[in-house]
Length: 337
Ligand code: NDP
Image 1 (cartoon, rainbow, N blue to C red):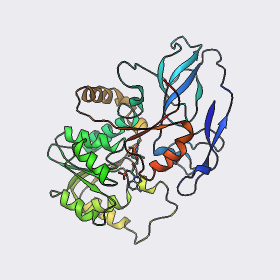
Image 2: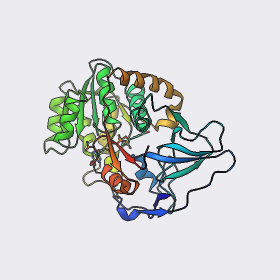
Image 3: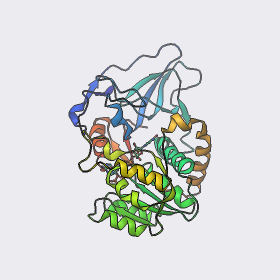
């Protein structure tokens, strides 16, 4: 039983030294328990927050404990009346081969209905995040302009496509020409701007001739800077994530722009609302699952996974996620089906 533990807390960007691979014995099941064997493990930006002991909405991982995370696996042994050996389940087993469970919080999966790993992405937490943030907070109306960054990622790719399904003008922001080509050709956005371009802000303005009505905030930093002057009166900003800041150790250089931000909120009468998906929207999961399953089976949603082979490669892949090296929803294959 291999497990990847948090060896030390990162300062700035995580490094390989912040993780350690340990070998332990496979746990024995007790009364009412089952043993889960991980097949797929999700890598998500929020895990950077769990590595830190700064105050947040969730407890940090303790140093010496396995990293947390969503997993898809199979029941290896069972003393639980609801589960049989071989069943596929969605769980929160973390970065390890095996985990014990008492059945709480598990969701049984039917691999004949949907590839099991999809429940870590399009049909799981990231898809749900895109759906609720965009529709409940963004409230996009046909013909309006939506801007979304990290647009080829797990959340952003769904925001972009749901925005198109709702009849909006969708402007994607992504890192590099290959990701932008994909956004245009496969996600069907109206424009995609590379945030690494020197004239990024000018290109964004040119792609939003009628201003911006919904800015789905995934990244913060210079994308937010470029978006602010383009926002229309009454624009909505679901604040989903600020990935450009997750590794920051200090405030950015330059003048304090908080006053400018507050002035824009006031004058443009913006709605800016943060949300934490399961804390705020767990009661609406069925609505999401119904719509997203339908869109997928109708071929209206395109989904891209990047599968990394082997638990031992998770740290490097996770470090890369925070620097834009992933292309699509990042999933680790931990074991055989
Ligand atoms: P992605 O699959 O989109 O991967 C992260 C992407 O972020 C990278 O590929 C990169 O895309 C972009 N990125 C990384 N660093 C920077 C940077 N410095 N500046 C600009 N872009 C950067 O991840 P997810 O879809 O899983 O997550 C997207 C956002 O949603 C994150 O902020 C995450 O924290 C948030 N989130 C929030 C939830 C909530 O409940 N509020 C739930 C789930 C996710 P590119 O190369 O295109 O720039």
